[in-house]
Length: 260
Image 1 (tube, helix red, strand yellow):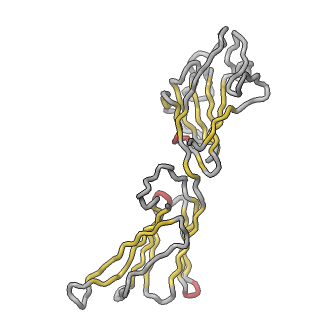
Image 2: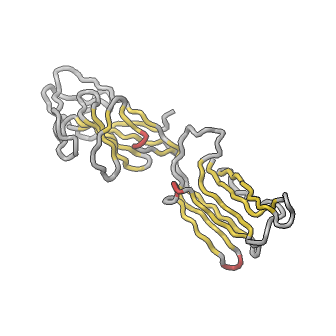
């Protein structure tokens, strides 16, 4: 299942044929911007509810990507498409909408699109198949996790966010009132649909709990997150005992947190 739809971006002054993908044209009409035979054909790729789409995940089958200057909003440009299409462009309108423009004539305002011959309508119908490949992702969602520590527990804590998510997740800390708390909040990115089921999920952050110098734990600290959306893996830190040879003290635990 694609989890998105592709529709024609229709205009009121165009004469459409049996479907919105066809138009009624007259022999000899030349593809011209704003003319009876328009120089462009526009499609919309729209994500289904709960999904998101990105131009990085879409391409034209058999076409070649073009190295053109970056645009705002972000876009990709393509050539070597089926005749009579000279060029094509995919523009990221939003996380749920990509606008596709097929060019039937050169466009001097677009770098790299300013050569070739404009399409002229012949005496017979013209059928062109343009194949698009792409995938949608499960939409990102907001996340908020907070961690509280009891006062006076001689524990040092540290949170390290996945570097790839540092521009999406923010963390704060508060030591007022004798209670130390940490909060991580933000918007997680979209997730691929083909994640390996046996994996822990997408790595979000690590939460490290370490005993102050001269202290140890009788048993390893545990971390339970009150949400079924996350996995937690723990790694105990052992330090050789200063008093009993061959024995280890539990001096810390690193918790790694994953989004399922």
